[in-house]
Length: 372
Image (tube, rainbow, N blue to C red; front, side, top):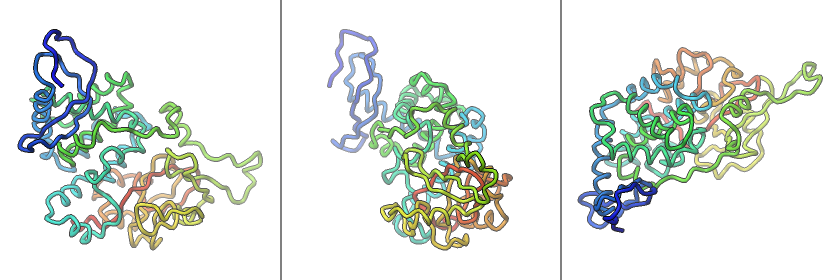
């Protein structure tokens, strides 16, 4: 497709193709880009975008997991409450150090065996467009990818050494494109940039523009979702007289029936195991219920979860659970996903007892990543 020469007006976004340098005729689809009709072929334009994206991404690997963590802390006030904890959970589920361990390994399977990985912890292995489905901002994912490309095309990172500045600038671009409140896209934009850092340019582009699944709550506003997460099941007019209250645990907000009942003060794994539906198709072993579990004594680390809503209705984390979370490598010493909070966003479900409705997200893997 060659662009015409008569007009210099900006055209509607179009899908173009990228040939990475040195890759012969292999074609990598790039996202929808706005192309100026300036007499250059779209292929040459796309190749230039690819080069600029390489330059844009180049500084990102210099930032450590700690840098991304501190940047997230810095932007959290700018993230809407609906995605504030969700963004922190996503970062805990997909740590850069683990991605780098796989990337630098001669044989990724050796890494998986050494760290006793069960499931899929790698974004590059088919999860670039799906790992963040539990974020409200997931619905803006195609625009996030396009904004990252466009900012690279415009040299958006040049002269900006602050990772937080890059995140905020890109967030502004996404908000403008979506016509949305910047607070609703700040979290997913952080996820987009950290995804680019982990998977590299080729995989980021090859995944395509992204086709987000519409969550069940897509018709609700962000504020309505926050309010729904905070509500408890009604106990009846005389509920205060009931000796045993019953609540609900939502484990996937995108699916209408992704919930199971839980008794007051019951452990999450115990209630999950009572769910009689078939979960053997799940991504991990020990899928007795929706929450994978093996030992129920904080020995295996299989049942780790992120808490999207209602963490104040879970029992306080005990020192033993904190120690085990760190030994598994799910949180680091001093990580704000666990300390100094008494009811943190990352928990072992076998150690957490509920006293109200809770909304959780289950990671697609577990292991002993502290051994990396």
